[in-house]
Image (cartoon, rainbow, N blue to C red; front, side, top):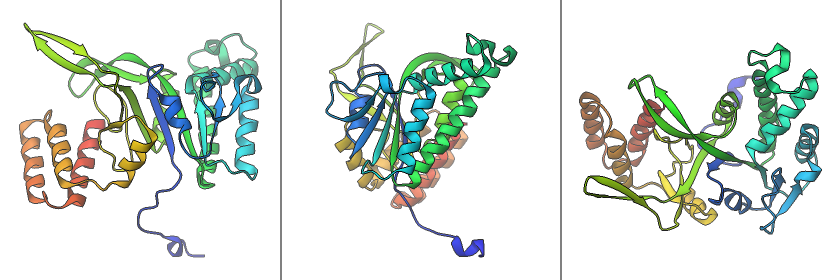
Length: 297
């Protein structure tokens, strides 16, 4: 059969692989469990306050237990449409334990004689798991990986400056792999407002929980769903944002914000392009996407 005969076109948005990261207690697990017909691999026993289907942590004590459960989800007939892994950090712990058992060592640092070989092995295992998750996606099942976060100083080679970023609280190699293979990465936090008095900036909040969907210097995020930068942290708001087509005004506003840190020559080019296509939402989305890729480099 000719491969050309298998070519398809047009958008094909179905089951997704989401990563939802954020601080403890912000509502990541609640958001994930709100998806239709969800079942949670509750590796931290964090869903006890929710009325959800789950496999508790005491039934998934080893990596083998977890992978057998994942295999059953892939191969058996069931009605579940969403698989939640809570959390990435707990799964990393199962992987580390399995690596220690495999290498007959007491610490992942000692695997294979050290020199980071244990972390390379953990990345290999996580790649296999993400491949199995992709099989779930092919079956029409969305997977959500819940991740805790930490603050880490990032040295930016483009600006030759260092600043703090919020990242997943797991090994860097594993975090990079998960970000690369996921369709969407979301960062959840409480809404923060600032005021300046007597040259001092004060921060305060009112408890609003929000989800960021696009990369910014302070945190990792991405999406393939044309979502706005910020939406309320609720399943209903997420569905509404996915269904709404972006209007030109919001696109122009986002492009203007993303352009603020560019050098003057590049900012001028972006301004000329947005002015030329200010009534064309599709062209504006292309400009926004190019800016997102530029910022992510």
